[in-house]
Image (cartoon, rainbow, N blue to C red; front, side):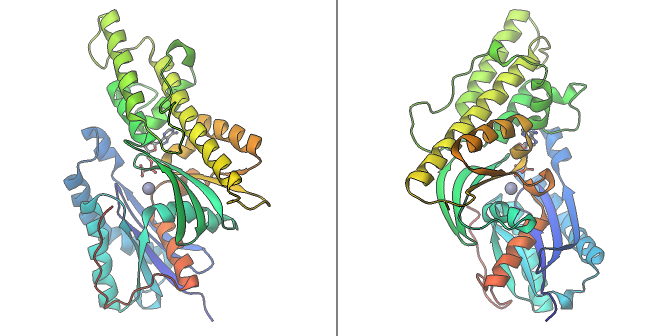
Length: 356
Ligand code: KG4
Ligand code: ZN
């Protein structure tokens, strides 16, 4: 039997992505349009702008992925598309496009949960067996879960306010890092990482979040407030205008990054201890998978490595291109579902989703 082929489509936030993949996980063709540059200029995602850009690009992105794969619409076995969670207006574009596509070409439709797709992407690259622990940290996500099967996740903790990437983006914006010579055209999180390399984190001591809450949830908004207040104090001391601080930007970046990293590490450590106490992880090769844009931060990876080394877990961080949003991870989740025959709808079925 020839390999079945899946088209994956992602539009949950600010990336319009599509990929065609065969049943073995081989990427036959892919295309990605990022809106990040546009949103960077406006200082954040404006949902109606994101929706318009998805609408303008989705047809071309899907066509490109199909052309690059050499696969025709009739050869596809199914279309897999992110249906939640995400920005409702962005998700709607991918969903409408996909439903029209499956009706036109009479193909099965596989609705995909964006976070599950992030969690499972690692299995496309190597044979990680269930159950394994997953840490997702990006601009929109912050959660810890135990992956027990392709559609079986035990949520252990999540952010109570904002995600760590969002926090670092906001700090970077408050410091106007976009104007910094070392930081043009990169994300706030990347800018913080680069500047932190030349900073002394001990020059600013931020209180670690949630010190008295003994669970696996996260919180970053309080840290952001502390950082903002320190920046304002320094600006006043030095008599400079808002967003023009120069003297201690590296130290602020280093202290912010360290506090984010140690909060993530502490909650992950607790999740590992919980899973061990409840015997939820396999005794052979227990694994922590880390994904999401923030997972590409080398400082955070180093601290997580200390956590996994001391608890006997194997740390897996997929390459950055698979940690961030794209059509490939959605196609892979579609392949996993197709293989197990789970969650596959006919093109005639009614599909309505809440974005959360
Ligand atoms: O996964 P992603 O591309 O998109 C979503 O947020 O879903 O992640 C982007 C986020 C941004 O907030 C960005 O600042 C952060 O990941 N990020 C980083 C680094 N690279 C990207 N944060 C810290 N260090 C990095 N090297
Ligand atoms: Zn994502």
